[in-house]
Image (tube, rainbow, N blue to C red):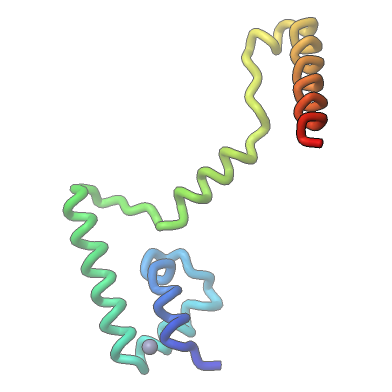
Length: 111
Ligand SMILES: [Zn+2]
């Protein structure tokens, strides 16, 4: 199936930053070969990225999706325990009890 200009433009940023899935890459490449408008668009985006990179004075560019992925990973991490509690089983038990009470209270408040 031929890729539409709309799809091609939507996938341009991930494509240019090497984030696009390997299955999609040939499709967008074929579209750019056949569609001068989208090819022009790709050139403009690349030029803009280059200008941005120069303005930031850095050779490193993070893909646009990196920030969201890092934040999602951080949010999914288990809660960090202070080393004090790790070495203090009694305090850990107390902490667990308090956390449980907070959860129950929060759940009751939500009712
Ligand atoms: Zn196009």
